[in-house]
Image (spheres, rainbow, N blue to C red):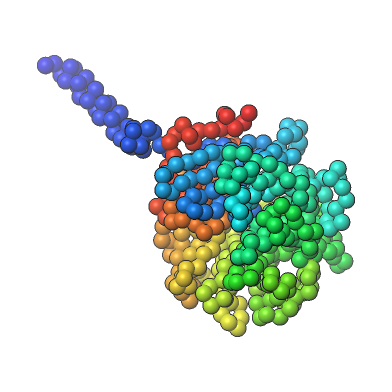
Length: 475
């Protein structure tokens, strides 16, 4: 055999081996059907966020998830943990945002969906609002901006294929957060308008078919010493028994033209606060069980509800949980304002109540990023955080600390992707170990996102043809 022919045969052998090896690296089902690690590719813009929650619920063996899809409409999918079957995504409603190609800000991102399952098994989705518009009427609790807050309900219990939109909540909402209590009462919390608006809740006692009038619990108010207005960003969740717990930060809503900061209105937030809503008594209190006058003003919040004064550092998106002893724990990202870049990198900070005072953990080891907090039955603290390293690799990981500990260690990496970062949801309500949270992969050059459902062992796989739904859902 000539040397040239031998070299050619060697080259062909290497090429065939490489091809066969690459095929082996593609996940397949038992029927040799290709699988992918995302469940949908039609997430749109900031498809999920911590503030709009819950975005997922585990119920009777199935995890239901929702996210912002094409044209900012809400989409819903489900995964059956017993049969390993995916359904959807299906569009649950039509947003009034995302339809105007001439709008300067093409993607508003404030109307992402949140979800709830009522005691009769119907699935509820709230979505579509960024404060409402003047055409929707007078907003007596704030100002207008864009979109319309909407409420859709599945036509059949636990069926995500068909939906109806009910006209039974205020059109002026944004940042919807839904909570169902043990007695079936549903609370819908949201900001009643744009930045200069009260935060309110509406209550339903009939599985979300009707809601009471909005009741304010955080007050917007004009400041007199500077050109700005008080505004807020709370996160609400279930506490023990009849309690709803609230972690929040303060947004100094500066005028577009002001003497204090030439950048005008910027996303400047400061400080950390905490309070509790006793839904049985209809009373609000601080961590010391002292009563709070509602709607809470900035002055009263500073006096009675302050967890930490962050000084000139900026804050973003607090989350909270109570341990087995009823003591609250808070995670919130904190970092510097770095001038024209609007705000600097923010590291997850950890605060806890030790029965007598708030403890601020300065050097916890937590990364730059944001996410959610969970406490185990043994009072171990866990953070699920989406972060990005200096090389542009995106990572979603769990960070653990022992009970009463202050130092966190990365315990599990749930997902990592090069040249990407992730928008992350809160933890799925009543989550299954296979499905803890939802993330959207943000890559440069496109507004569309791959959507992942992550559990303790990473993403849940799906047959490739079921996950590639973008072209169909754009219609």
